[in-house]
Image (tube, rainbow, N blue to C red):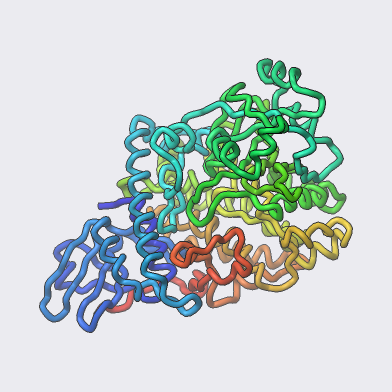
Length: 597
């Protein structure tokens, strides 16, 4: 009846391409199956694809049935497809993936995307089988920070290949991929300081950051104590260590003894939901590494401009004005990234495949119970049209003898206040643009499952508006010349809104409406009321709030676009090229399906 991996693909398909229309399904073909609404695309004068729906939300995400259909309106024939069969059908129909901006995709690129979609499905099935004994806990019980980070079995809810990745064999997957729930030791290298490129946002030396990583590990302290005085003990993701060894840019360092692989040592670390970011409960720092693998839309190398962004935001957050923001929002915290490093290439510049970022661990020496990454909280069950948030709220309502609809309303209001409002305030009042998609928002809950604190992570995804330039001045923002994240036009408002609202807020709302915990009308009322309250704050930069209230359409990122046209979103000159328009839920009201052909 339901396939969560297929649902990710189908949601991306109908969202990004205008060839698909939301319709009432023709009764003569679908009434006996109990299907009434769905999406339709005409592929010839008399043939149509139909994707039947279980539930539809005007907030841009739907629940699809697991079967797809081809109907011949002349002969009356109907062909039913399993999802794999439907993917094969699509691989021969590039016209269904044409758009006004980028045109018709190359047929080879289309088939590569379809192959990656099939690979993603296989990866999802493998991990669900591997974690089958944990499914009840992952979807229905309280999770701490790292349990939540390692719970994302399916991935991005609107993506053609949410769990596609290159370069990992089965043993690698079970060791390093977060959803397998395992841990591993880091590789440690002896590195001559002369070949280190350091991006620092404060005056604290790299030696102190390295020492803090090993302060609670006697084995690593002993190893560091044996190094020459001009060397540092530097961690490396063990999967990436193989790439360091094979990199011709680093060969002379190994020969000259400036770079030595000492092996895997120390306490075990765990991958967070982003795969390349690692957590260790006894470390004050998380670590984010470049990995030479393609995940979803891009090769995951940290670019120098991304590393500079961490040091710029560190300087800004240390300013009096930004500290004022933190004092105003005690339930909002930023996981700061004050320093990053990379090995130098032969020209003395940072080699992106060797980059490492230090990220603040706010849960060091603290409890992280009932603290979840938003993407894990919103995750759909593997084979049932429901999600973790819905199941948790229903269980809480039963325990507390509360009406579940009232609890869902309270949850949404608290979520908007605790998770969304601080990030809007950062933009509208302080000129800070946080790329707050679901995997970058971590929420702490109280015993009644109400959000009480939000953490934002991923400083490489931050930007600054013209307001920031006025507030912090050219001196603090001088490095944005190199980091490329000072935006003085309106385009960035569309990008910011996609991450915080389309990706995070709208998916949260649809998780409640698709499961009938809230009606679309109730959700729209609460959401509109929230925006009007923000409007009344009269903050200096009202552009995002006005855009959400007044625009007929909202721009959304095209994950299909990236993959079909072989675009690396992290390095493209014009990121807006991969964006497309969605109907604004406030303008759409409750959408009504049109009549099918």
